Amino acid sequence: MGQKNRKNQDTKTKKISYGAQAIASNHLERWPNPTPDIPYETQMSFPEFTCLCPRSGYPDFAVIRIRFRPAGYIVELKSLKLYLNSYRDVPISHEESTAKIYRDLQELLSPHFIEVVGDFNVRGNLKTVITFHSDMSQTPSKP
Image 1 (cartoon, rainbow, N blue to C red):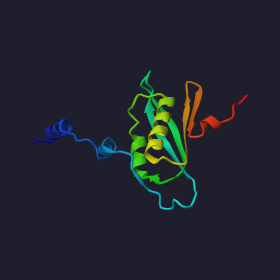
Image 2: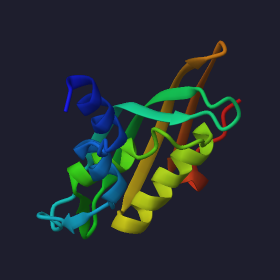
Image 3: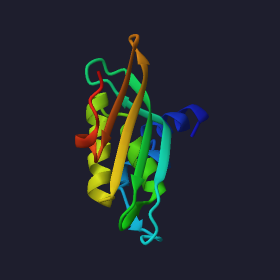
């Protein structure tokens, strides 16, 4: 078989990459909190978050910041990374993506406190920062 024919055959039978497979088969995992008797806070930053604008289909880029005080569970970090990467081809608004991440982590971990911030890059001369946290009812109004 010639080089050109082999290349055409490879293209036809191209397999999904191991990274794409890992993202597609991933689910958020929790682990028992190793120190539930000591109060502490965990902060994480995911600077390469991407999703698609539901209207234009153009990519939106953000830093997702997560801060929580664990109760009985912590999040397994690789599962979190793959979970956040799973949004890259999803048409979803800034608000909806940030809210979904917040709800999924709240449901998975049931922490004492959790905050998720979607800090989206400027697009169309507009900067968007979305914040969800478990004490939203206690957030003072701003003038």
